Length: 356
Image 1 (cartoon, rainbow, N blue to C red):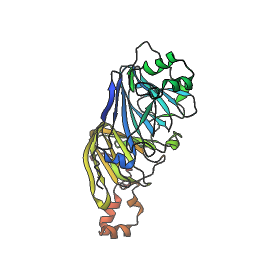
Image 2: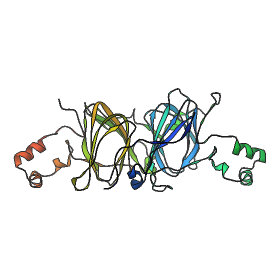
Image 3: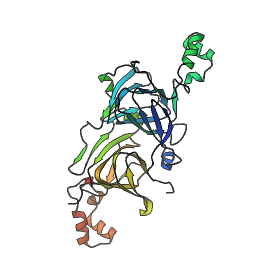
Image 4: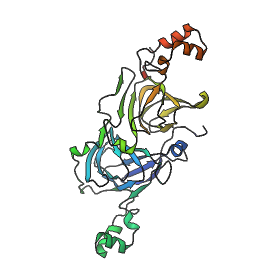
């Protein structure tokens, strides 16, 4: 494969006093374009408001830091006003209109990962703003705005010209936005930091999986996700997605080493990954990670709502399922070597604690 898999940081797209919007560029990270994946990050300062917009792509939003409020209007539905906090995963299907607001001192940071296969540009999101200097009102003539919304000329001028901000604005502290409703989180949000663990291995790591069972709306966007926390020095078993899905990984915290092996047994990536970086594992390629002493966590989307992985080491390894004679012949080794190979990792599953 001739695509560079090196992990990348995002680039600033726009911003101001209210916050910033960053995105990963498909020209820098070629797998975005090849895999039709978009990735972006929104950061809001205190009283920062991300103006209402909709996107050409279905997404999963993941709150990396802070607390805030989000408004979500699904097609032909009423507005849901939700309180959001670190660890929240939010499914955003096509046509969803959203706004985001931070009223706290700590910066609110939200990661967006999604499918751009039906978008305008492969590998990047295109957002359509309802207000602001690049909002839809600025594109229509006064006559069309007046007739469509049945308002007079002075109201048209106010609607079109009052908001001088683009994308993100900083509100006066006296402006009060709608309060979130606890019931609005139902079936729309799943907190990966507080959810029951799907995998929990002592001194190894923990996993929370986002799928159609705990957040049915992901079926509509066609994406699954998981949050993985690896303990210091632990290893994640070599494995691959066996249902042709791509795995898009954002490093939330910590650092570690990663290796990816592709076609013909060629190692296509060997590097150190750090917090804030994004990398993509191609379909069927095998990936493994060993984290540094301080541990490492990552949030991934998988391009199927109910992903299936095959692991090559540990108790559930595919090697354990193959017959001894096949292994001896395939590796061209003695039965003694085969027994040593098969006899290891009989209790460990997908995470391996550091050696003592």
